[in-house]
Amino acid sequence: MPGTIAVAAATHGELSLMLKALGGRTTETGGGIPVWETDTECGRVIFAVTGMGKINAAATTAVIIERHAPALFINTGCAGAFPESCLTVGELALASVEICADEGVLTPAGWLSYGGIGIPAVERKGKRYFNEFPLSLSVAEQAVRLAAALGIQLARGKFITVSTCSGTAQRGQELHERYGAICENMDGAAVAQVALRYGVDCLEVRGVSNLLEDRDLARWNIPLAAERAQRFLLKFITSWSGE
Image 1 (spheres, rainbow, N blue to C red):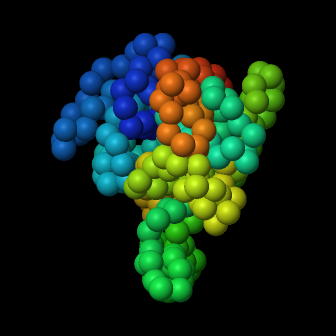
Image 2 (image 1 turned 90 degrees about the horizontal axis):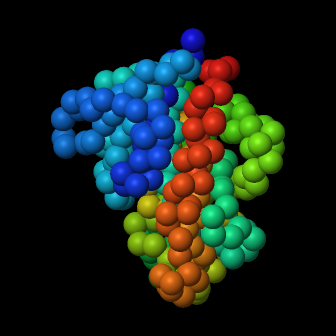
Image 3 (image 1 turned 90 degrees about the vertical axis):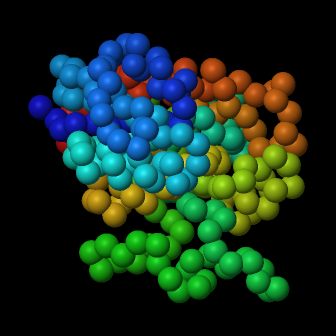
């Protein structure tokens, strides 16, 4: 049987469908982190609501890994898609890498990342990681194959994580020109960074809730994005072999 899977999202609504489908009993973690544990035919699954932002996400990820030693850490929720990605509201996106998009220094000559400063965020097995953190290639390929078998469109590409969401088309364009990412969120890079530090495989799948344009909530659909991401992940979790 494959090992434990941990699934985290910023809000309860981004996990509620999976919790309803798989069940789960609350478990103590400390720090006020809402956590549920369930045993399925495919193994144990831990669900955690991190709260918004990178600090909450990093703290929760570390606690879950320390206490439950998952073989796979899945991060999910909603995301804003760059118009250049050609994604639309309700479609799914899969991270190839996660990037801390606004950690660095703003200088008179322009913005510098950790790489420009020369200080890595993580050093592991002789390799230095600055603002960009890879996710598991093999697990991502399993997700891509599953989506293809189910006839689900799953766009794969770079994700960026920000502290301040892009609420204008101009800001979105600036970030797309810098990174060439397909979507933006507020916590994914923190999860990927902590998972990398611990050597735990990480997968990130998000539903597109909005486009990165001048902010217009009337054009958003968070419930649809959260539902579609969860329905896909339910299929993934119950089919995951751990290979």
